[in-house]
Image 1 (cartoon, rainbow, N blue to C red):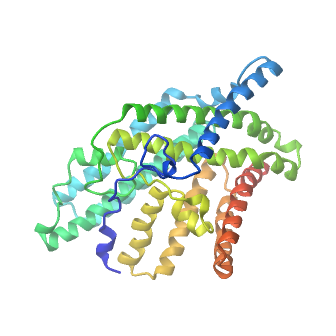
Image 2 (image 1 turned 90 degrees about the horizontal axis):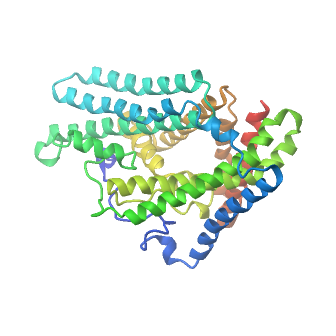
Image 3 (image 1 turned 135 degrees about the vertical axis):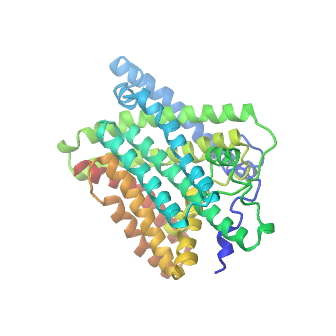
Length: 400
């Protein structure tokens, strides 16, 4: 494989995310299923209203607030974690400036890995030492992983650009791209693979941004109510109910929560950041709900992370270490599984590799799906996994 392949433009189109009701060019606007998606949004809104009134008539208040106060615990400190992570990520930019000044490559590599590892150490220490709840710990770990991937991509892409520059100085924009403005734009762009330039919109749509914020607010409230009313009471009573009883109570709330989380992150939050940064290539996901198995799902559900793993783990293994594509694929899958397990271990404050085991179990399912090679069978197996998996994991971790 040509090493130049790793430097291709990953983001090169002007496109809306498929389920974007605020953009007339979105795929959902061109299908006959648009009404069903709007129905789902209305159902979440009606659920909030009806559930609130039922709560008021039964116990005298609209919403359970104990979970809210747990979420905002240590709120002032947590609010400064994001700007802290943002400022810390500028160490990657400083490294590029030092390299331009003649900093040795071996020392640069050591600096890169030390600073990136230190970010995880700081995030893990804060999550474990400050007695935070689930939401604060998840928030800081997601920030750590997001900024790690941005720092890592910025370093590796500029390394490849520097190699091209040394071979042919007239054929690259490096090192003119090493500017504070360019790096700042990358940090606020909802992309995890660095490019010197991204496809750009020409204007900011205030109405579109407000719509995304409104949908995010509705979905956040719906998610809060599902957690506080349908999940937390069951988890907190885990010692007094059987495994199967707990699992049965969690299946429906967990799968609804899973899909709400997807919409919040990939349809609302990423599009809000895209609008702020004028980012135009908004394929944050593909049609994962139609995928034929977990192999397709891993490529289609979370495109920003998939593109990072493809360019900076899979292709890196092939181009830099001369590993076979099959070995690189296994290494990429293992790396992804370990990262997921690390997050869960921090959240649960214990090492119980149920998530890692479940991800490893996908391998024989992928092989079986290839052997059977039936589209509907693969889709059924995928959705059975999505419906049963989250509740099974939560039950296992709660029972440990």
